[in-house]
Length: 292
Image (cartoon, rainbow, N blue to C red; front, side, top):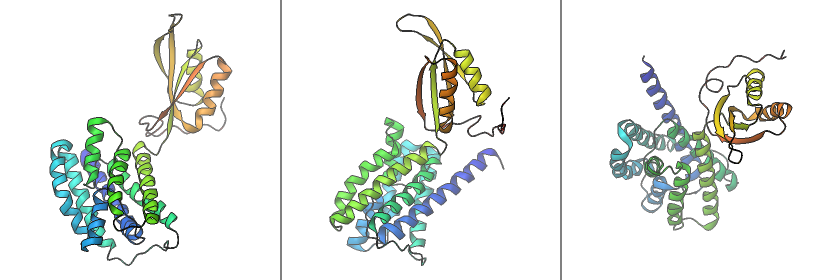
């Protein structure tokens, strides 16, 4: 099996898992606790309430025109994954409505709202992370991200608001507030899954002792360091700025190293949403218990 085929199999497997989680949350949490949903899924719930049509079927019908629009913007691979995700979501919506599984959370709508956001966010995040969508507003959100750079979680939250306002036609205000809680949790979880589970920090260090600091970071923390050429804005002197990416838990050690070498160094710490490569996604050599 080639590497490309292995990647495609992994993509489809995780999209399937994501659709299963999303469908499970929608059936056993949202529908069971009379909570609404945003986007096209929310529209299918409106249709379910007013015309008693199974969301498993209306999901497919409503997504056909959106998938046609997506054909122009998403490309062949993304479109194929979107079609697959849409079909899988419909399948799991059909399955979970017929499998006798339930969650005993009817007594607490707060827990229901949080769990709806967790199931939906994790499931959708897995799907988006592998380049797929479940159709509907996901297609529009992916197009916006590609064309304008707007994060998917933010645009999805905007779509949710519109559909949720329409859902007030069959929900009371109390359940709508818990639905909004679910939508907020959903958007945050989607962003978290997309940003990567391995949080890291980028450190920019301006110091006259840049070489000593870089060597200490490489030797003591076994992290790489890069020199960036810079020019002082006031004195116009040439400097070498040290740039290093470290785990969040190593920030304190970096500060200690810098303080020991140059207490007057200027430090900037940046958020790194995802780090790929040596020491992060590749195996690192095990650290010795004692240095020296």
